[in-house]
Length: 283
Image 1 (tube, helix red, strand yellow):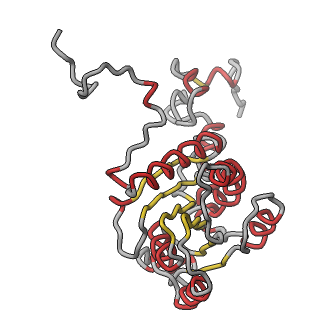
Image 2 (spheres, helix red, strand yellow):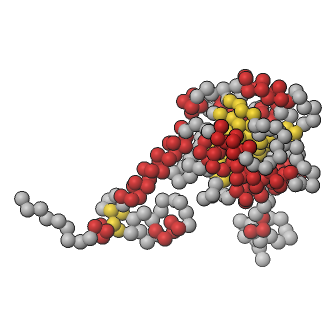
């Protein structure tokens, strides 16, 4: 049987989408075009790769030895070595199935923190808690460059911050920072956590700030800075926002829904009257 091959070039089988130029501004999968009734092969393969990277981010363990070694290479003037902690979730499978256990400290970790706390009479201004969360990769990629931007601001403040030993938590969730800050007698706690990976952001780190931390607080008491990564909110800008929120929290002694991030207010135009800028005003 004689085989008949198409005479037109293969690339003509792909129909470009007129919106494809917008992909230069975003990682969102828009304007992909089509090949017949499906997406072009290169975009399908890219999607499968992103899906595999998201799975790896969720299941890969945090390289604590490598992380602490990178801390030792920095000139941060930290008084104490990092403290390694663990949640009540013994392994990754349990962590994914029991989010509540990821919010609670293991008994041995509580004892470790109490031992350190008993040797200090004065409270700390700040505890920094580093949690693997749902992307250990995000923590490994972003923690050092972010703290390199933030710590000099805190240490060079007019009233320098006393900072507790860095705490590194395995199998942890955001809320685990509250009992850590409470046991360490810290006035404020920030939690750096690997965020749930999307299909274009397996390396996204989140920051959660709580004033007067204690076990049992809800998200209403926390401020969040999300998508800290090179392709998102860069480390310099994230540290600027974090320093602003920390300074405001220490001044006003509050956090959460009562504390607003005003670092970008200059982007909006304001008049002398206080009103909702989304609502048109009578002339």
